[in-house]
Image (tube, rainbow, N blue to C red; front, top):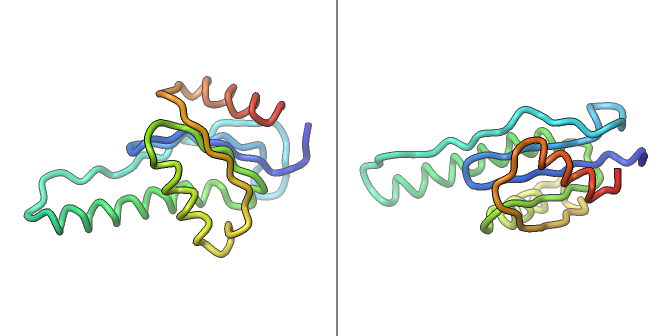
Amino acid sequence: MSDKKLAGLWMDTEKAIVVKNHDAQNAFKFFLCSPVKAEIQHGNSSENAGNNAERTNRVKFFKEIEHLLTNSQEVYITGPGTIQEELKNYLHETAQFKNLKITLDTAQKMSEEQVLETVKDFYNA
């Protein structure tokens, strides 16, 4: 088992399932964190208001994920669509994660157990 602080997550535009092998101090076995749910904006007065609300909610969603990834040395991100790329860019624009090694992948919907197994397989844990 590596003593590196590793994390992995499956995400789409609505939720993220985060798996990591560390708490604030120590690296140990992989465990599931509580899923992070994105706030979805419905019914806006204008397209502009809708876009602004969506952008604000996306940043809030990424910040919650970022909080769970604090102290990680490597991150594996998978899921459908392009949201993983957006998160990678967001993290690399954040000073704390500027040099973080991030690996992107694609995957359809997964259960929490499947995410846990996929991340463990990725890191050979």
